[in-house]
Amino acid sequence: MKSKLLYTILLVTVVFTFNSCSSDSSEESTTAVTTQKVVDYSYNTSEIETMNLINTYRVSVGLNPLEKINHMSHKSEEHDYYMITNNVVNHNDFVARSENIIKVLGAKTVSENIAYNYSTPQAALNAWLASPGHKENIEGNFTHFGISIRENPVTGKKYYTNIFAKI
Image (spheres, helix red, strand yellow):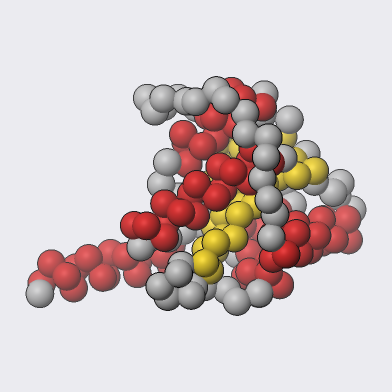
C-alpha cells in the first residue's frame, strides 16, 4: 500500500513538472541509433489539424510554417505507443529519438512536446501555448516537425507526441 501511494505521488509529480525536452547534435548518449529512414506514415485527421493549428499560430507570430517529415511522425508514434503500453506520460528515450533524427535526417537541433488526455487538437495546442517550455518549442527556430496522436484503446485517452527539428 505504501509503495503504491509513493508510486502514485511520484507519477503525479512527474506529470505536472514536465515541460518539454530539447537536444542538439552535441549531446551524447549510449543508446543505439537506427539509421533507416521511415518514409511512409498515414496521418489521421487530428494529426493534420494539429499541424495546421501549429503552423497557423507560427505564421500569426511572424514565424515560418514547419514542413512535416514522416520519419519524425513515426518516431512520435513509437513514443505514443510506449506511453500507452507502459501507462506513463513522459519523455523517456527522448535522447535516442533525437539522436536518430540527427543521424538519419541531419537535424541540428531537436525538441519534443507531449500531451495527454486532451480531447481536441485545439485543447492540446492551448495547453502547450500556456506552458513556457512547450510554447518555446512551438515558437522555436525549427524547420520541420512530426506528430502522432494515438488513443489508448482501454481508456480512450489521447496521447500526443510532437517533435520539432531544425534541418
